[in-house]
Image (cartoon, rainbow, N blue to C red; front, side, top):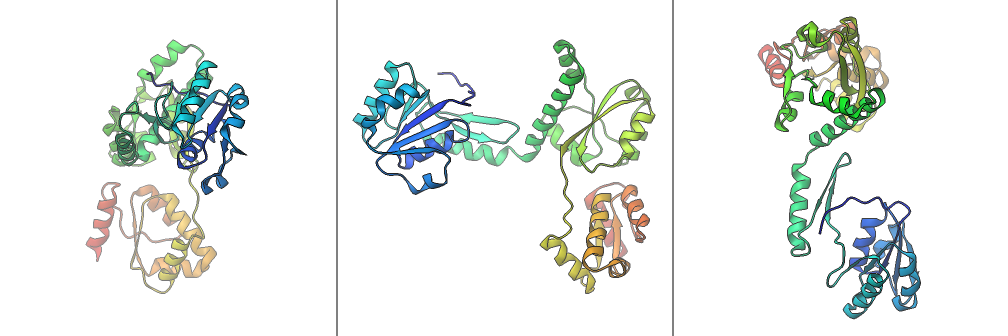
Length: 348
């Protein structure tokens, strides 16, 4: 047997059997195909599925539905009936699978991470091993790998829209220099085998612009992969230096102005219960200040900041706070979370 990924849009899957096994098979196919389930009675789990149900005896419907379907699954509790259904499907050249015995295709265990999926099969020898492998992969294939898949897809789409020749696109992908703004961006890339060409000493947009050699910018295509709320400093600086800049949004940020945790933080700060604020980005600083103005007002928000120690992870965050009128007590030597907390501790 060989693994394949199939497009089942507008294909019909018929499942005979409405018990636990039939339910699992229906869940597997419901988002990708037109699913019909035939059974004398149905597991309650079918109530939440987007599948068609026919209540009745399998033999009353088997000839018609096997003819009309692309995939046939025999999942009744009767082994003889299951084999009869599969024999009929085989005679008509259909793909078929059964709960007892063999079929001409297998349904794998699947880890679906959105940007990619992994299918696992022991070829029917050990379903328990398939489940074990799936659960282990679900734990180990983290969000950073999914983000990498999204980034590569965005790059591929951008190249397809701007470079018509496939060979040229492949060459460009192979010759890409990967630049990162700091160690927290670098670490997952290096872990996955990606060569990082440059990381600035100062982990900021300004530090990135200063660190990149002119020959890596002028006349070169540069993709900036970031959020929908990224600073304009980096793209503007690269364009001013002659770079052909494309901005690709790979994730979206949402201001949490009225979340329970933000409200609890503001209430605690307003009552003098917070001794220090450690801001790790310009966006987080602006968001907390905006939420404070909405919750307790301008005066109370500024008083809360005045009465606490304020740390900023880097110069851009410090500048954003000072622009809002907030005094910044400390900035670490490097833009690192641990160093930020240590610099605040040293002031106590």
